[in-house]
Image (tube, rainbow, N blue to C red; front, side):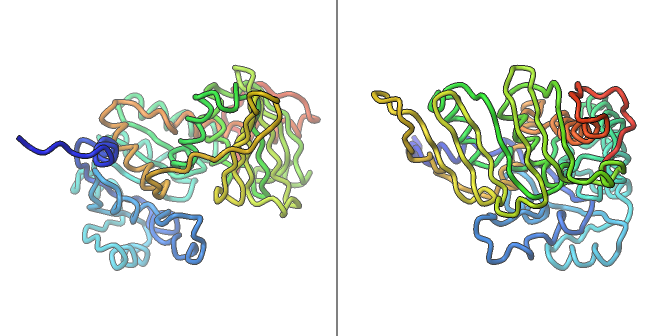
Length: 360
């Protein structure tokens, strides 16, 4: 009779996908391959963030192929990661290599077409980077195609899988800060690109779809066009949770700070997810007290956790942490905040009727 395994072994083992899947990357540039070169000396960004090395490090998936229209990027990808099966046509790659999971890291413009093509080709899961696409109509088509063909569509807003935020959600579920009432973001970044992460994370924490928004943009000129932009906004979710976005370019003193506020306390994430604080209420005096935040026992790269999560979503038959609907909502909120500004800073109800609205 085999010796029983220890508790630590069990915890690690139970997070591993049950099977091993064939993985591929479509788009061999910054997010697909090279972004970690930029993070040397930035220890609060746990390596790896690029999809290729994350797929190599993740359990339950083997990186077997890559595709990009740029031959030079393909050759660099092959040199970096040892992937021999490289293609300039993703359809040919899928036909010949039969990947189960495809990390889709192209620029947003072709992403809808490639997602639909991958869904039609019979892959099991698509893990597409953010922002999801450019228009709401494209987002609708991506989600519809994946539903039609039984393909898991996950959006790579990988903070949703980050173990620190997983623990923060558990703190809220345990009632430590009471019922979640509001969320706040400070960060001098544009609404649709970087803050796809924030808005997808807010959707996960809110546990309800966004209902309406109100926005004030920084630039009248940029608000009149379709490019991504910064500004401030207010989001109300269907269950009454509210969020404030402050992405003004002038708020350089706030390096991506997030707050999750309950009726008994709050959780604060500072310095681009490097520092976490937990505040609760003293049971006898009702005064605010700072508590030890439950640091992850098994800290890892959020991208690695996300890719393993996508493997488990294949096995479960659905994606719950960051499905395509979360990516679409992030784009829709960003566009809705801009539409509010365009219409004279009024309330804008979601979903938006005009699905051809675009950003980026």
